[in-house]
Amino acid sequence: MLRRACLVVFSVVGSIAALAAQQPPGGFVPIEQLPPSEQLPSAPLLVAAYVFVWLALMVYVWSVWRRLGRVEAELRALEQKTRK
Amino acid sequence: MTKRYFVPLLVVTAAMFAYAPILIANAPYESTMGLVQKIFYFHVPSWFAMFTAVFICGIQSAIYLFRGRAASDRVAAAAGELAVVFGLLGLVTGPLWGRKSWGVWWQWDARLTIALLLELTFIAYLLVRKYGGPGSEKLAAAVGIFGMANVPFLYMSVNIWRTIHPPTSVVPTLPAGMPGPFWFSVAAFMLLLTILMTLRVRLEQQRAALDELYLALEE
Image 1 (cartoon, each protein chain N blue to C red):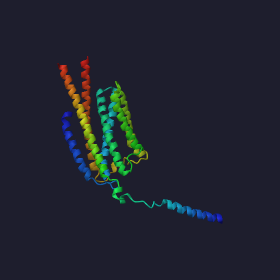
Image 2: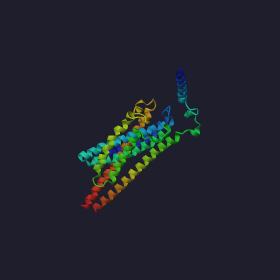
Image 3: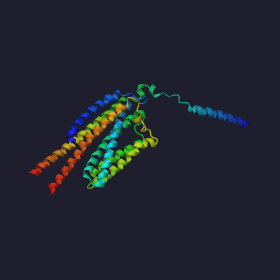
Image 4: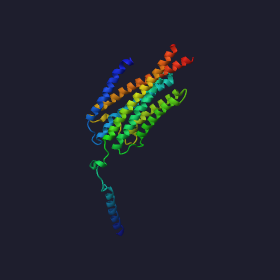
C-alpha cells in the first residue's frame, strides 16, 4: 500500500516537474516585440552587401584593364624594337 | 567577331546592373526575413557565375591536360581567376545575410565549409600558376579539374546533410513577384561573366604573344 502511494506521489511530482520544464521561460519576448535598440537592423547589412559587390567588381575591372594596358604597351614597345 | 559584340554587350550589362536595384527594391518582402532577404538577388547569382567559371576552368583544364591545347589553358586561367572573384562575392554577401537571419556570421556546416574549400581550391589554382615555376600550368590544370569535381558536392550538400543553409528547392519555388528580379539579376551576372571572360582571355592572349616575342628576340 505504502509502495503504491509513493509511486503515485513520485509520478505526480515527476509529471508536474516535466510540465514545468516545457513551459517557456518567463522572460521570453518575441523578436518583433523587442525595442529597436535591441534589434539587429537589416538596412546596414543589405547596403554593405551591395556596396561590397559593386566595389569588388569595379576594382577587378580596373585591375584587368590596368594589366591589359601594361601588357599591350610592352608588346607595342617590343614590336617597334624588333622592326628597328 | 568578339570586338563587334563587346561594346553592345557592355552597354546592355551596364544598363541591367543599373536597373537591377530598382527591380529588387520593388520585389515583395519575404515574410520572415524582411529586408535583408534582398541580398539573395546578388548572392545566388554570384554563385551561379562562380559555378559557371569553375566549369569553364575545369573543362578547359581537362582539354589542356589531355590534348595539350595552349588556348584552352589561357581560357582556364581566365576562368580560374573569375571563379575566385565571384566566389568572394558569394562568401562575403552570405554571412551578411546570415548574421540577420541565422544570428551568426558563419557556421561550419557542410554547405558553408565546402563553399570555402572551393574558393580556397581556386586561390590555390592561381597561386600554383603564379609561383609554381616551369610546367606549373599542368599542375594547375589538375587543381582546376579537382575544383570542378567539388561543385556537385557543394550544390547537393544542403539536400544531403543537415545544414542551416536553405535547400536547393528555394529557387524553383519562389513566391510570385520574386522570380522576375531574380532571373534578371542572374542574366546580368552571366553577361558580366561573359564580358570579364572576354577581357581576361584577351589579357592571357597578349601575355602569350609577349612571351613569344621575347623568345624570338632571344633566338
